[in-house]
Length: 219
Length: 262
Image (cartoon, rainbow over all chains, first blue to last red; front, side):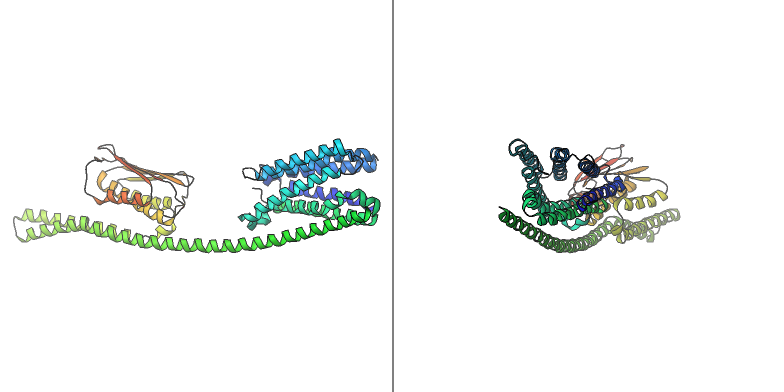
């Protein structure tokens, strides 16, 4: 098995471990919106496994690309905007996840209808708008978090760990996804270094999700 | 294009890393700041609590002294004056049967005075008052009253423990104690019931007896009712007392905020 394929399988394993951690602690989430986060992890590990299956077993790269561009990636972004919306519910910050969803949906539509980068592994324009919107929401979250007394209990604050994972992953991987095609064509060695690096932060993100589920106290 | 893209790429990564490091530094700084603030708040709260405790103790002592003074003057003093008058009449002589009767009356008055003095000394020292909660304090009071046959005191509450600040608890306890004492002394009741209803930070209290009652419009000159009214004002509560001859007496109190010290 090639290293990059193994890296993808390991990513699915990291998602699966986070999902299992969530299921182990299911009792504390079952009456809370965080149960959807656990189910999201289960769904995303199935989707990623399906993506790998289509790519390497069925050997249909176009279908795998379409599966990610039209379904998995929008699902991921919209889920996290929704998670932040639930977290901010009842505060003045609720408009941010709404705005994020609108910006991402607009970026996605522009990408599909006008830019037509359909042969790309990820749609760069929509992906970048999604990342920027999500990063702004994460910054809003941290601003709210460090301004109040919540910061004193950061260890048990689930959103702190989830946001840390997302921030690390999207901050580190955004330059890669933005310039992926160029790097692949013209700087192959840089491409591969960064390819594995973004897998590294991916594992780290799911590690933080696992911490959130094990240590966190849903509020 | 290739070189430019690579430069943009590395510049982007550098900015991202710098932002991330700045974020971590800011987080640690804010965390430490909050910790210090929280510690200061904790110390301030402890200091305020200590002050509240001292203030309550001093106030309770003053109230107790005033109460004792008034009780000695109004109750024990009057009784002993009467006993002295009887004793003086006794020294003037008279028929033996009358003298025996008068000495019996003197003995009864002195016994009553002693009982009053005992009751007063009990109010001087009550270490439980600072530790137990209001429901527990009144339940203890009920246990003592119920042990003596004659009248029954019932305490009910929608919550087992009602967290009232120390100063308010002391005033409230004294107020209800006054109501109980008045009912026991004057109403001839068989049952006194006190109900606590906690709703958020507010507390509703309903106390009633099934005694003979009194005409609320007539002044009885006693200090008990005045004390109760004064204490209700100290609690900043809505205070109502209702009574009708033959239909018992009821007291209702509505404390708006029991968690903030007065």
